[in-house]
Length: 383
Image (cartoon, rainbow, N blue to C red):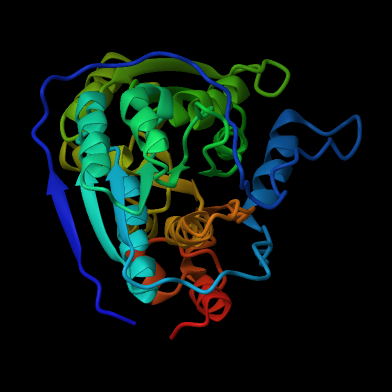
């Protein structure tokens, strides 16, 4: 194998914008079926007990390999462009790094473009990748309709294009690596109901940029908490914020909301946001008054849960595993073959279960309870 290197390429943003189209999730690969909702054990099962049963199903999910059973021999020397929605968000930075790691095994040169939470920046990066004639392009949490100009140029140039965590791709022939994002959101709602005995007063910090969050995890949690049969005493307030203001806006919104309503007992957002909110809550002395619910299970959030610092639960897919799946499919697509189902697993963790994570997972985030790296290396016949 030839040596590979990775470069982070940053393109200065032209202006900020927020897009608000809604699409349904269309995927080539979804998680193994662990999110089906359990019916009540009998007619006397309480809503809280039913929520507990559903949450525990995801917390105790048994992870097995349901991915491909064969692969194509890699062709060394390929050049791959990875365009991340925002490298400041660890949930996007992790898979970008994972693609670098997997690409190196195949002898590929991988460059990361930082979309900086700006669709104009993301489209500019995609166009730059097309102009540079990369052999493949991976989009991380970027919806193809938002960067339609660059997508059209990539497809016209016959450059293999794949997404991670996109909404309905346009055209639908573009493969995506995803899991049941709505199911993840409902599982988090179930956990909140269970741990609060049905007395949830939640602040949902709703990011306005990431469609996969709006129509995925947010949709699942919002609907779960607003289902009066599931939680008759739940109260929900949502506050919008933009990815460009990740470092300041969510924490400020949470602080203001808690000061206005001391009865709020849950704050919800994805883990890169939750880490910032948790630190602010602890520093301001509000950390004992609220619990945090997030998703991604990044390293910082795992530690917050272990330390009992606001964040209480995280639900996630193993981002590095998904990255290897993207590389596997790009290797197929570069050789004229179709993408295949990768079936990325999902689980949920709190303080009672997070202690089972390895030292490496505490430092790097949940890796999937399975040696996916060895599996892909075996499929690719690389060391």
